[in-house]
Image (cartoon, rainbow, N blue to C red; front, side, top):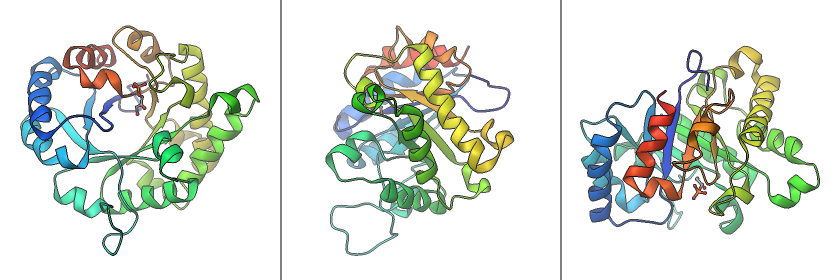
Length: 255
Ligand code: 13P
């Protein structure tokens, strides 16, 4: 982390877990554990849990995010939710282009870009996910792919709007597998993302962008991962569903 130039952000991604009642309970458990955090604390929750999450987090240092948004503000898009709708519900962040959406729901670099721009236009902070598969890594394409995905996601995003962008480097092979990238691999991947931003916006701007690592980050490995200069926080799946584990990661980012 390099807190003197960029914000440290620990964000949970609950994926398809928790009912509204469970949401209230979990956030109430987390609040006292993370109240002294010296980093931003965000929980990205399923659409149906947003109302409960916003209410439970009120008056605390926890901010609420969603896990996706559509690129139009309204219209005939059955099953979708717009960025404006999220803002109206008290949402501040939104995860865009998670590899599970790319893998299972036909998300492409182009739709990731459209959704990112829609989120930014609506005033949300976009947490844009990039990451290589194991096959791509083994073929030696990690750097090329991360730079391509990053630049595609940020096409036509202004330097001003970039202030509301977080990039999460999530190697697909490390997500939900228990196989974490080594601290060096995480730092290298995040470094490629930062280099892509530097190529597009200049090195000074790139130095200010928060780049998270995600993929089996947990209470045990958070300290080491977050000690790396290019790792400015984490996007946490499984461990964000447990108050104690999540709070240990928040504490690691608060040092
Ligand atoms: P896990 O922490 O469960 O590996 O998930 C990471 C992730 O996909 C966060 O978006």
